[in-house]
Length: 504
Length: 115
Figure (cartoon, rainbow over the protein chains, first blue to last red):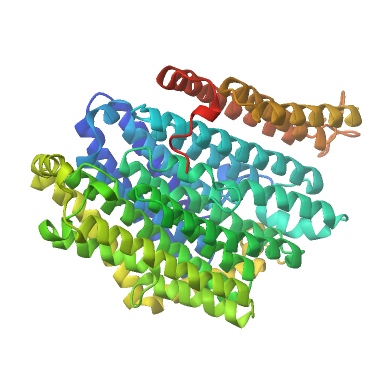
């Protein structure tokens, strides 16, 4: 019995409830935002440390023993994801202080972010399939409301697609949960891992696996199910975009990792082959979409899609090294991607536009911002010694060892194209001179931005960039962590034993 | 009974997907409502429809006498109904607000954020 497993879920809920109590006082809500996410960060780091030293931790809700009650399980992957979610929450809470407008605060921005974090952490830690559905709904409802805060036309258009497709994916998840229960009579993940191989008709198990694949594929933004993502992610305030970019699709990726290692490993030749094709097309379509666009947030949104491909590629190859690469890539990607959105936000507040054609000259006035952009941008493209290089290196090496030459070629080419669109942002926003017709607006935006606001925006960006450099330079401990997480994923006996308390 | 229900669930899924493929946002939401009900009925059906056998344990024994209806899917359906209700209420308000802002009911005319 480990009560600390429930803390990353409870803390955001308490913080959210407190923000609701102080609904009228925005200053109090800001403080609760920073302190609450800070406490979440500490709790999740403690959880990761305990999980690393003591093995998989289990908390039975209401003391009902598994598989009858709902369990929260913290294995290394879940704990790592929780830490990343907390880092994102904390960074965005600080970044929100100067960037979120009074209107957004008045309509409940802070309570909604806490609710979103609670949903995300709950999804990472639950050990019950139906409970996963509930957490996914919690985070979806919060994300719906965050997406339309402000109520501009573009937000409405994006939100209709986002809401419709994500509801469709949730209902498919619910359908799959129902069928799983019909097949096995249990919803506890560890119990399912024992009982699914005993199902007589393994063809039906594959059908259910495909339902989960489509459902989580929509959430992860994988090809050919990603169209809601680039249509909506560039519409909300940039702090919200960063939070979404870092966390929401990764819930889908996490669920795919969990389900297709622990539960559905009966027909790897079929399911994981399909995942491999998905990952290849996800990488290509995403990066080509990014190459076409000239709006910072749209470019970055398409890069989320393309990077999801690398993570799914790690899962699809299904060798120990590939899973390590996938986990490593998730860790690197969440930090880098959210950071790029945050930098994009600073560019907006300095120049008044996200359109690359209308901005420029930032290297002349703010060279340090250029450096802070280059760290995550080059890391995303996979240049050594930054974190992205090691993520790509491990995954591509696993591909070479598995002799899947096609996917290796795709991954390498996509890396080059990623570099192309990052250099595009660099050359347009930082290197070229400010276009004259928009000079007035740019000067006005730069004047109105106070030094204090700028410092508060730069603080999380610099911290996340430092993390990127650290993961790159000190890749060994991070690799060992990913290795241990992958070992737990591939050998389900650890998980089953921790939850059910017996050897299967 | 299960066979009939299977056809009902299938018909609901088909109707909802037809509605969601229409261009009107109102029909899109009607499709989502039908879809959520179809999923709930499906959970209800897959666990077997048992009549008149409440899962009550008589005094002095540790198992219900004879067969019993599985209570868990009913709990799941209840939870799913509540969640579905909340989310769909949001969707209805969203399309109302979107109609006010965009002044258009046709999904094909809402492509300014698409790629």
